[in-house]
Image 1 (tube, one colour):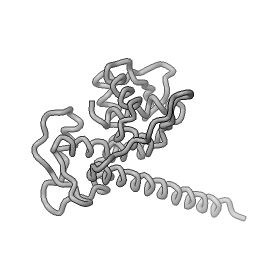
Image 2: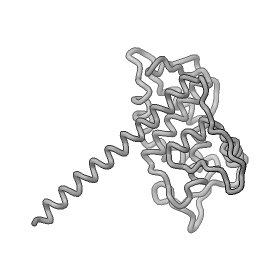
Image 3: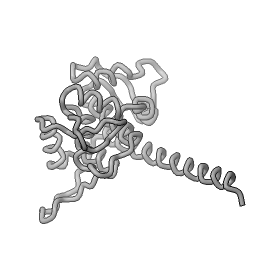
Image 4: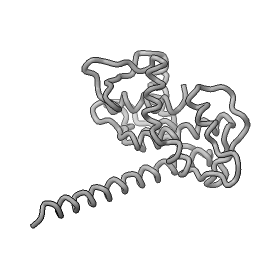
Amino acid sequence: MSTAKDLFITVMDRRPDDPVGQGDLSLALAGAELIDLIGAGAAVVDGELVLPGEDPKPYDRVLDEAAAGLVREAPHERIEDWLWRRGQGLAAGYQAALEEDGELARERGGRLFFGTKRVTPADTPARRSAADRWNEREPVLLALASALGVDAAEPDGAEPRNEPDLGADEATTAVVAAVLDALMELEAVRQRRSIENAAFANVWRGP
């Protein structure tokens, strides 16, 4: 499983009653993909730019699509530009891919995630693997999930552990930072639209 798929499953498991916004999750998934592409040698981060690396080894079809979408000629994209472009509709794409692979199951009365279909993570090795990464506080998964508001607190009675550290991995750190910036920008856009809509409503309401 890729980090993005683990992130999707983790968010569903950890936020069952308060789903993460589709736009927020899509940005974080794009960041997770980029981190995996860097780890596979398919992409390289040079400062703020995303450059293609070596041809990627087969991973999974969604990640292969991400690799194929890298800008291979100058001028290359900034990390933030990659997140916004690749992230368009990405959460819905991952839901479809996970359903197709049997990692998500439709349930009558199950929780609504995206669209009109009610789905829940199936009891599969992939779900257990994602849970293991979370319980082990794997730094990248924890950082991206925490950015989405997923509670990373220890269970009651558990001995506190040190917060995960992305260490000296400058590329991963740059991607996570760009995800945080993009999420803040998305929230600012939402707030601005809310204010504008409220002002418009007041105009129509009149004195």
